Image 1 (cartoon, helix red, strand yellow):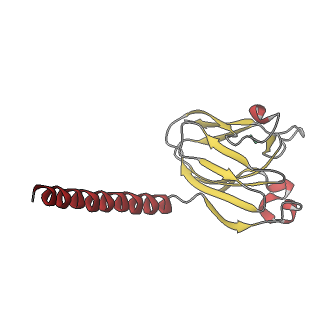
Image 2 (cartoon, helix red, strand yellow; image 1 turned 180 degrees about the vertical axis):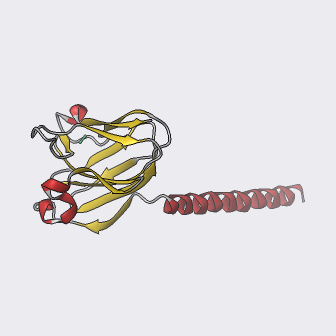
Image 3 (cartoon, helix red, strand yellow; image 1 turned 60 degrees about the horizontal axis):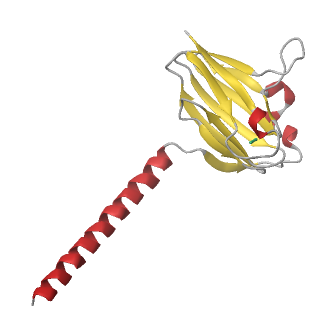
Length: 167
Ligand code: CUA
């Protein structure tokens, strides 16, 4: 008789745990869906320049609206191509006014790279053949480090750039 009671208790416990687990999983999936680092768009990794967003002149920061920007980046071993400045030097720092909304769209020409902006919610995996994009709002001034968090080879640790959010 006692055993039967315990079995019942364990069954209730088991079912409850399952419900909690599924609920957490559901909320997790839903929450993730609200902030999609999307992988929906495809691209030819051998010819990314054929895509309007990744043409040489469109790389790096572009202003779309008063407080809206887009940043197009080509990742490859071992750097982030953010375009060139007026002097023809590679851009390694992007300056954005505080309060701006920024869409990052990133692709890679070789292997899988990471795209993480430390201290923000920007954290994407960049895979060959896909365009990863994410929108974020910068409300805190500061200098944020962009780094690769997917091991991509010997120069992996040197893959970095900065985003400066100014007042
Ligand atoms: Cu690119 Cu690690």
